[in-house]
Image (cartoon, rainbow, N blue to C red):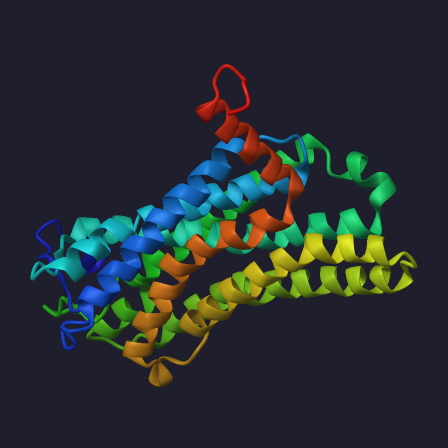
Amino acid sequence: MGQASDSAQPNFILLGFSDHPGLEPVLFVLVLLCYLLTLAGNGTITVVSQLHIPIYFFFSNLSFLDLCFTSSLAPQTLIHLRGPEKTITYGGCVVQLYISLVLGSTECVLLAVMALDRYVTVCRPLHYAVIMSPQLCHQLAMASWLSGVADSLVHAIYTLQLPLCGNHRLDHLICEVPSLLKLACVDTTVNELVLFVVSILFLILAPALILVSYGFIAQALLKIRSSEARHKACSTCSSHLMVVVIFYGTIIYMYLQPRDSYAQDQGKVISLFYTMVTPALNPIIYTPRNKDVKGALRKLLLGILCPQRIRC
């Protein structure tokens, strides 16, 4: 893989917000708070969402993804924001790049799968149990993970094979593809084209599937006469739509804009948002709208506070 495979590669210097030292303490508190919320919210949901209902199975997968995604990035980010140490080993950068790409790509597909589940819930309610069988749910979840692994391999291989010619000053907080491409001392047109095509599969086709699903859902909602039933159906879909808009909006900004128009400082802020803030928001968005999850949370808390099942 050329220079990128050289075992003697020096460390990367992550510049982050070094040119704005007064901003780093504020960002440190923000990242720490978001990470703690992610650990508490997504960790709890991963444990309690063992409900035999497909949407909660996928929700549990999403929470586990967010938990791992933020955990792969937050500790290193906190270290860089807290003190003068801004370096990361070449191996650490490669591992961070692979893991974050796998988890991020998997989430792209999983959100589309969850939209399909919402479509079946609203448009085919009488056949829901048959269509969304446990076997199909596990197959869809596995397909999401495998597609994430495949996407990560393509992105990482095409990025890490580029010669850096001694330039290891990465103007970012984390090891991300757009920033790494800027370090290359050769023409990266082919790399950018390949990465753009691969990104389209995840950032255009997956949202397109979500839009089509919700198009059918909207048609079905218009045919529902009961306002109570319509409100219930809208409630089950609105939380998923909010997560989709937040997640895809930031990812598309990062990976589908031309390299020449890529604003580095804006890219850093957007990266912090979708890697730290979005995973912390997901449980807050989903949980209040899902009675089964809230019920499971209450049972967990009662089991901790009242192990003898005595009302406190």
